[in-house]
Length: 350
Image 1 (cartoon, helix red, strand yellow):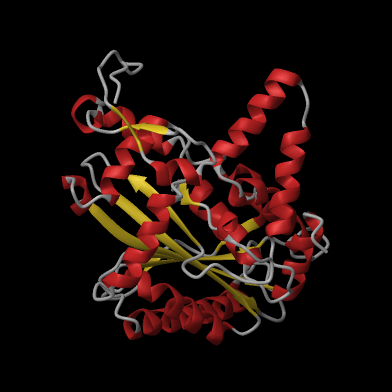
Image 2 (cartoon, rainbow, N blue to C red):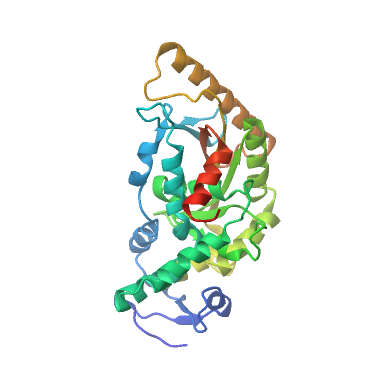
């Protein structure tokens, strides 16, 4: 061990974790551990962690029209946000534009931050974009080449979690894939928020884009339940091991702070709160223009949304999740299949 000083003048202890080093393809990755909680200003860590969320919603907020305000379902901690695609002056829902935005997020979604940073530094040093282009190609190749894959939904969920809710991704699922035709077991992704009181909120994400809304609601909550059900510790623990071994953070001091939450030898390990974020998309016919809907048409839309709320509430209860904080984005589209195909075409994965 050595005792360098950090950028705020405090002495810190550097410990090398081989497993962490391996996950970053770096043979001697060191992290600041022992003195972080004592000497690193908590406010700085919270702010620095928040800045890990990339981008904002300005690139796609205009493509999704909210239906009323978010609704907290009765006797639960589930908040539902319903969004419809905006409709252009020609009467066409902007599915292609949304697909383009989803495809543009592929690199951030699929490739760990440290590798993106390395490619960016290579560009800054040499002026050459070859490493960035190579990462984009790698991300494209990681996509599961199937019209029924979940990747389209995972990309939109990623955008909603990082750019709308502001929760940085801390587990990048895609690099863990060993075969383009298979999914890694587990949630679609894990994001987090570090609170001022020292609590680490973890957010397991799950997306389902199906033609049928009933199946989408059912499968979504059945898939996320093993990670959120208070009585299913073992499943959650397996995913936490993945987070610890593949922590998608490229700042050593933040890594050092976060790693304590995943080591039972530290008091921070009992300051972890688990939450969920779900994206449920499905087909609806006679697609409405919510922005201009009035009277009878608006009432019909409201009736549909209320039915979706009841369906979600039932699945939350059925899966023992009433006590868990869950954000649900309900996004009906004209065609799930066409949206997936448009995303794949955008990234060149056809």
